[in-house]
Image 1 (cartoon, rainbow, N blue to C red):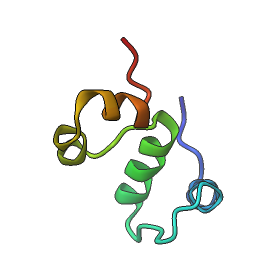
Image 2 (image 1 turned 30 degrees about the vertical axis):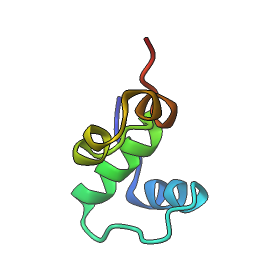
Image 3 (image 1 turned 45 degrees about the vertical axis):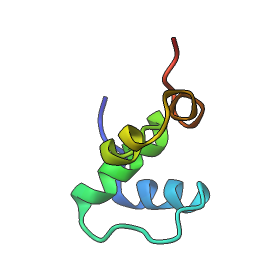
Image 4 (image 1 turned 60 degrees about the vertical axis):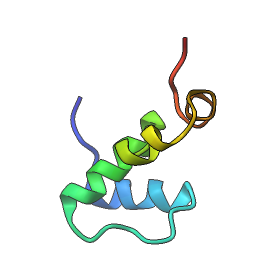
Amino acid sequence: MSNPSRSSMEDYLKQMGIKQIPESYRELKTEYMRQIYRVLPRDKALAMPLKKARQKTAIKR
């Protein structure tokens, strides 16, 4: 799978409601992948109860 262009990733994040678009390409790509796969940052996910983490992400039993 090839990565989309920077402008495509920025447009997607804007469409998803992200207010602050990351400046660096690496951070932009990371946030883009998080949004596509509905993945929370590790520290945030670990702080949640399992049931709530499952509701907010793509984690299935």
